Length: 325
Ligand SMILES: C[S@@+](CC[C@H](N)C(=O)[O-])C[C@H]1O[C@@H](n2cnc3c(N)ncnc32)[C@H](O)[C@@H]1O
Image 1 (cartoon, protein in one colour):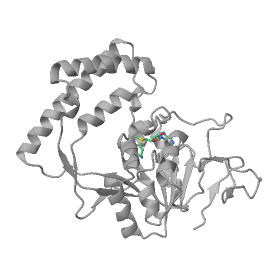
Image 2 (cartoon, rainbow, N blue to C red; image 1 turned 135 degrees about the vertical axis):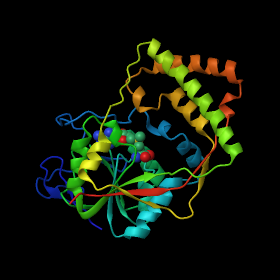
Image 3 (cartoon, rainbow, N blue to C red; image 1 turned 45 degrees about the vertical axis):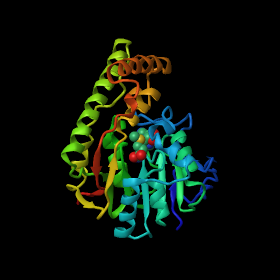
Image 4 (cartoon, rainbow, N blue to C red; image 1 turned 180 degrees about the vertical axis):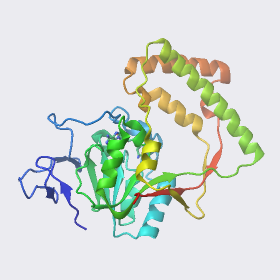
């Protein structure tokens, strides 16, 4: 499938990699096309890109890659369902694609997938995970405020955990609506909780309480040392309601996943500062907060506190939003 983009220089419709109108060659390095980030480009809104987070966003990426295993869990199940429901002869834009967790399973299904993210750091891990296997996967450093894609050119936009990281969600939602073909849809993945036994619930409760306690200690330390949160207080849900019909949900039949690593994940993110609200926090302060928190947790829960296991069980589902007529 050939797909048109917009030239970042003259905004004409073009194929990759050279603009057929102005001759500009869209820069690419490490398999990532660069559609934004030029010094002259003015962003229309604020956002939190994950340049300072990278692989730490998903601690398991390193582990899985090191073991040469591919585990995309809910994301794979949702990607498979998209292919089953809509076929593979479609173009999907994965907006705020991050480490490629949604994009790679979509591409694996033969779907023409544009993995767009403001952060080339995040996309470089997506490139590493894709290992050059998919000609139908385009990695694009693009700002969601100004998508370098023509009107009505994409069948589906997938958006997961990105829209709360911007201060003007309406501008981005308008961009999503603009690039969607008539009859196209916005899809957000979800992982609805499934029943657990009393014992599993009890185990999970203990873990959750310890995680919140440790996390409270960490943030209290940061606050006492003048940390400023950079999380945007957005109203994206209301904006979604304005532009899209009420979403309907389609579950992936038979998919069940169990997760016990809540403690390990949260500790990893505290230790590395891999969280959107810590983007402006100096690394020295993150380290100091972590040292203090680790000491606190060892005293209270014992040296093995990082091994406390939680328990949750969930499925996978697509929340499908059709554009309001
Ligand atoms: C929490 S991560 C989610 C990544 C991925 N969707 C997932 O579910 O694993 C959010 C991603 O959105 C990206 N992002 C934030 N603002 C953006 C913007 N204005 N344009 C494009 N990407 C953006 C960040 O760089 C980051 O990689």
